[in-house]
Length: 185
Image 1: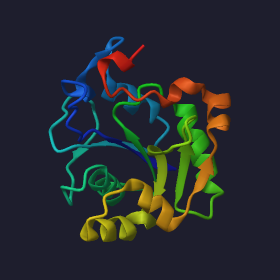
Image 2: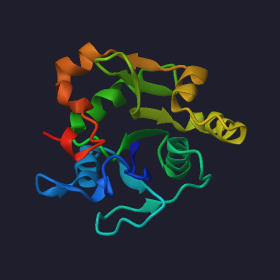
Image 3: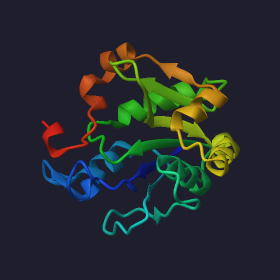
Image 4: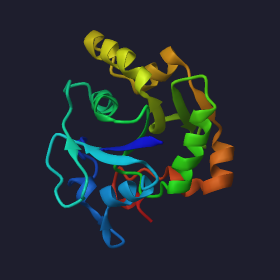
């Protein structure tokens, strides 16, 4: 069992409007991501603004000012289950199968993070599973002013899933990050 958290706290500068509420193919981007997490035992949104009408709790950053790391901190602090699926609100092609696959990896992992690489070879920290054991490292980094999500992964270790495996199972589209409206097919 795992918790599912959607981080929706970004400023959406490149998008030009609140991308979480942008309606794509009949529903807000935020709802696409929430629906991908329907296999989680609990789901919630982490944001510093209200998102009503989604049927899940909205929690603000508990330690604001550290960008996505603040969101990860809040997700880990509020989650009721040890493993937390953490997703950015601008990843509309994530699927329940993707999260279930990562959770299978997590259950067998000796590390507190399960992360995927993109086809370009970049770590994707906002489509990953984090164990609540990451909380002290996240808090330490926030205190020290090191807001890099990748640093959490480096410091604690992770089970990494290669992009080739992700693409073979779920297609390359799972990685689509809608930073601008034009990014959406």
